[in-house]
Image 1 (cartoon, rainbow, N blue to C red):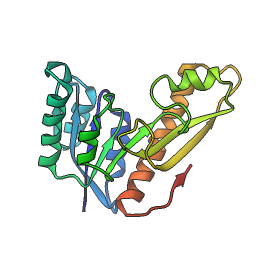
Image 2: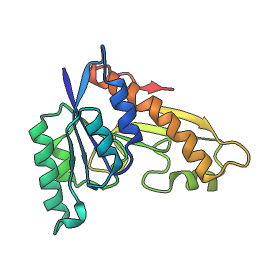
Image 3: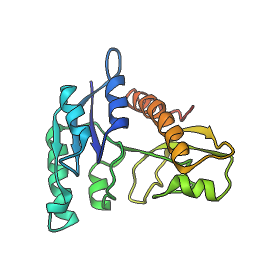
Image 4: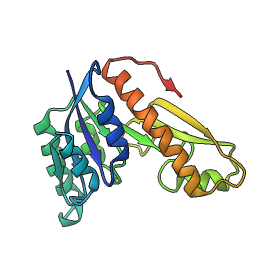
Length: 194
C-alpha cells in the first residue's frame, strides 16, 4: 500500500477530499497530516478521520531551515511514498524538496504555467482570461514549475469576481487532486484533464 503524507496550512478542504477518496480499492492510504500552523482546523479533521496529525508553528523557529528540519523529521518518521501539498502556504527550500524528489505533489489554483505564486484569481480576471482552473504538478526547486500531472478548467463568466472564481476553482480542485493522486499512486503516468 502506498503511504501518503499531506501538508496543509489551514482548513484542509483539499486534504479532506484526498482523505475521502483514499478508501476501498484506492492504492494509497494516509499516514500523516502535518501543518505549519498548529491551530489549522484541518489538523482536527485529520485526527477525526483517524490520521496522525502534527502541527509545527513555523513562527516559533529561529530560521526556515530549523522549521524544515523538524518537518522533514516528522515526514521521514511516517515513511511516506508520496507527500501531497494541499494548501501548504510555505515556500519550501530546494534542500527540503530534494529530500522528497519525484514524490512530492502540489495543487495550484491556476492553469500553470500561467500565474505561479499568489493572487491567481485576481491575475486571471485582470488579464481578461476566458478560462481559469487548477493544476496538480510535481514539486521541484522552482516555484510552481514542476511537471504537470493534471488540470481542470472552469469558464470565467461575465461579472465574475475573485471570490466567485475562487469558489469555482476550489470545487475543481476537490475533483482533480483525488483523481491525480489515485493515478500517481497507481504509477499511471498519463496526465489527467477534467
